[in-house]
Length: 369
Image (cartoon, helix red, strand yellow):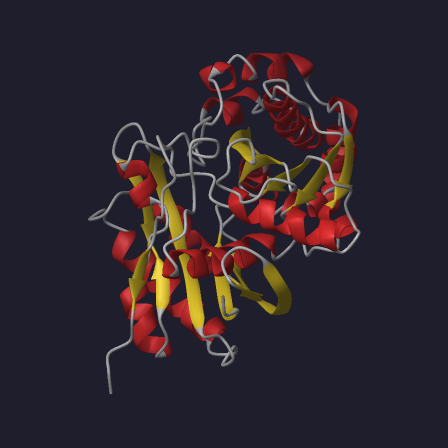
């Protein structure tokens, strides 16, 4: 099957900007990785997106947030003329799979018109419609990454876990020796709990900063284990796998650290994220020996130390497997776009809880000239 050069684009729940990355794939195997780029959101743009969080289509701030998403992604994608296909995730504003569904603001058809290239988008809705959680969606790509790294001699022929720490954390256990990501037992995935989002919100509110850069503030404090113990009583942690979360599913966490110093509050939220991962790993039937960390959280020394302290496995940045931890999710949506184009599953029972394999996503073609 012919390899396709696809551009994946992702703006996550951290609301810091847009990642874009090229990948060459047939929708199963990875032939190679290409260029990448990042467009940061300005303070005003990030504020606009924060204002729209929790809103559903028709909400007062949704149209402006969707317009910003399309414009920002189009501006970045124009720098990748080699892309034959674009995977566009859109901006998640609300996620309630058991209730109203899932909402990613942005119009893939409008983006296709701007770029004059086909765009695959709305990746989550079909999974939710069929009874799945709609998230996480990167796990099948994690399987492909493990299979690629194994072929490069960078990983052993054994199960491994990928931990993505964005606004929300998600973990994928994969067996790269399985024949395909949708094969029974190939992938088990779930959202672990809040990751960077509560910490970023704390820094924004108390220090006017986007994040705890490098974990410097948290490293000066001590975690409040009482707060963490109460946090772990949330019903999410007792739910069976797979499972997913909204960015703001733990509204009481901010109140719990309100009386702590900045340093101790940052340390507590950092360790809470790590404790959430440990609670999820405990639910796996087979614990991984190696957990590869991707996403912004791996740049936080306090977070990485907390993970190493609380997890029963070796923890390492995903770069150890020859992968780019900053661009893995963007690459995932390029890979998933090719799968949608070819009618291959993008999720299934082990990753979202859908009753069977699901091919989610809409394809928008530019108008004919």
